[in-house]
Amino acid sequence: MSLPGQFSLHINFLPKLQAGSYRLNAKQGISAAGTPIPPLDAFFDVTAPRYALPPDQILSTFPPNRAAGAFSTRLPQVVLRRRTLPWERRAAANAAPEVPWLALVVLADGEGTFKSGVPIADCVSTGVNMLGRNDATVGDALTVSNRVLKRVFPTSDEVTLLAHVRRVDLQDTELALGDDDGWLAVIVANRLPQPNTAYTVYLISVENQLGNLGHSSFYQDDDKATQPPAVIPEQPFTTYPVLAHWSFACTGAGDFQSLMQELDVGLLGTLPQPVAAAPGKPPPPARATPVEALGTGHVGLDATSREGEPGRVWYRGPLVPYPGTRDVPDAQGRLALLHTSDQARRVGPDGRENLALATAFEIGRLLALAEPSVVAALLLWRREGLDAARRASLLDADPALSALRATDVGSGFAARAGLALLESLGADDARRLGPTVGPAEGAVRAGADAAARGLGELSAQEGDDLDRLRHAVEQAAARLAGTAPGTDGDAG
Image (tube, rainbow, N blue to C red):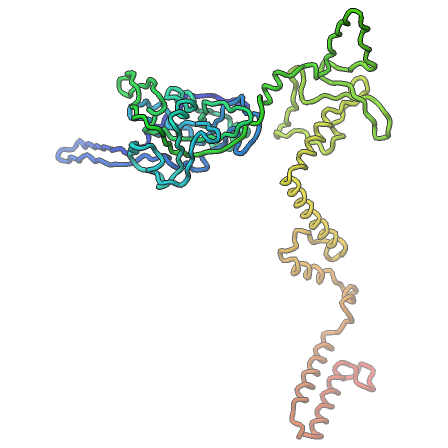
């Protein structure tokens, strides 16, 4: 098992069965006499990619797709999710199972012809017969001349050396790359990119075309005898199936590691050796202010405080002349979090401020704000937080609604607000809704109004009888409500 930050390498990881058609012969015997059971033959296929590779099988590529940088000191590579994938097919009929059927080639612009979406019959060289089940009807193909093939393609010997299996710890997300079990297959190219050149990397299948890559020694499965792979008659052009491809540009000589190894340590503050003056010439003038440098890599710099006072501070870059230390996470695996660069200011034994960490924090913050995705996420967070704060302040302004939460808005908020308001209304607070009306008075008035409307709809031919009836109803309603003319409210 690999520890966090470490990984183990394996030459290969062979599957139990390679892709192909198989026959299963099952026999069963019973000790009782006269009960023979005939054997059973069953046929099944073991499948594997041949012309199309599922996108989830590629975990990472180096260099990254469409990247531009100093990639001239590292071989391109691709990391595959399934550890057995490079060995799930036989590279040649007489090749050992340890020989992978996948290879990674790096071509500059103009060194090959790439075609996409062509019939699978056109994805291999003329005369190559691909037996067994195919996983697609169309695929991608790469055609190169024999000159390019012999000059930049890996040989048959190198194909085995350029594939391996890597096991990493799943807790190390940087190395695990989102894999589910920590076992990864890696295919490495054999060509170093050159500066100021654009390249395309192709993951090709050499199945049944291993002989085109040159002669080498392979072991047969039975007697381990040395025997070269079958050689396909030489043709001016060779075509291989392409399962994946990406492009990049190499823009300079040397990567970060090589540049740092060739770094002049004088940049850390080492004073140059004095130069002897030539005879007859005056010595060079002395420096007015000597360089302040510490063994830790810090240099003294002039600085102005926020109050406008001049002074000196210590500063160093990300490089130190000795192995440094790192902060240790707590029991929950979290590191101390800084909110402002001022929290990273340190004061040395001499009373001077050390601004190295504060400067790094501020540079990192500015680099993060330069990313559009980070700015968009911050704006979205601020908008959602502002809306929630505004709703909470509006609810807190009313005593009857302050018991509600801002998160209740949108999920039955109107109903709960109405209930909360009615529950909060007492005998005195009810006046906020208007003049109070007793239950009896309200019912009587409603009944009188209904009777009046009903009487108004009667035919006009009733004459005086209708007027007398209307007057009687109004008088009865007035007496029930205690508001009849000429009464003190206690009658009837």
